[in-house]
Image 1 (cartoon, rainbow, N blue to C red):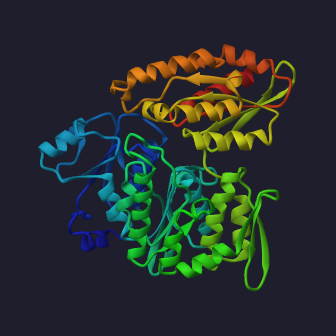
Image 2 (image 1 turned 90 degrees about the vertical axis):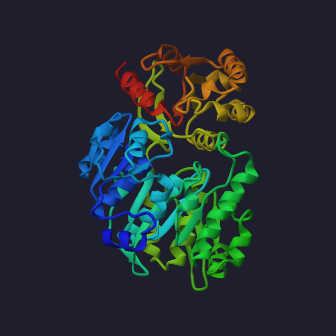
Image 3 (image 1 turned 135 degrees about the vertical axis):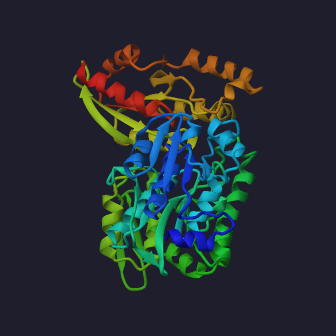
Length: 476
């Protein structure tokens, strides 16, 4: 595999005898790409400003890793790649430039790697991580032995990476999550693409929904221009129907989609083909996961996977950590069962789906919300208000500090945000500004006389708070 990188990618000069250094290698995406490179025989080093499980796993896989900026440890002849979170003033990036090292963004690395594989790319504003893991699990269960790079830790693997040797069309299979947030998905060379959902989210990069839709159209077209196959989820089929009809292989995909019906009541999918009728129970809760499963089933039927492997994958897939992840339960003073849930939801639509799903199982919901990025909160302020008022209500909502890793507090709109923050703080039940500060939350929990879900929502530090809270509450 490593030799083919050199032969087919002379423009990027990625060579087996040249070490590769990755700045921001502790992220879920970059660490996964690095593990794939190690498998292919490359010498890898990686740094990140923070320690974490993904950097640790990368080190365990054979890379030389360190925390913080240590330019003197970068090999003198290395190719350097940096994640989307690394700005041009980063000390290692500056050092690499000053020492005339070849340096590229994550986008180039994605392109270079993906063109060597039968790459199955899954993207969408919501649902892409779960669906990426689901497709990889399906192929694993069907005996295809795929490589897979998932944007979260899969419960059944306890990893975001799977390394395999299975092939389609004489190329090793790579199932990869394709990220629209930094437009890097436009650089992936895909043999097959799945789109789960298209909605405006990353307002720091996208001006409006039209901008988002146009990029997803390019993502689909990039695949189809090279003879690839496109699978939409149920949710986006009307928006992208023109690609289903005009694409190579499109008539087959369209026929398969017409054979699949979603059964919300039975929480499963009906597949009525030319010779038989099958029902597949879907194991992951939530209406959104029926939409994701729709695309998984269409993909499976297209590849003629056995009914038994499809049935097992749709029913038994356990999902990805931080997607309505059950941490445990305890009883409050009234002996009501209190379940603690951690979820990555940070967009109004995602939060709505989580709350809607939990409401079907629990009598009461208490939400602890960590807003993620000031720009998102400002843009979707009214949507967030609507979701929480219709869901648990402000009387069951606690607010965490906004997660602002991008430093958006320096932007001109911050004065507007200050007004929004005060309005929320004045109306929600309480705030949780630091780990361990759970007195008001526990008091409210102890007032509940019915089975209650305490759900932590956010894409930043909320997972740490959820784990810390459960540990503290279950001992009290």
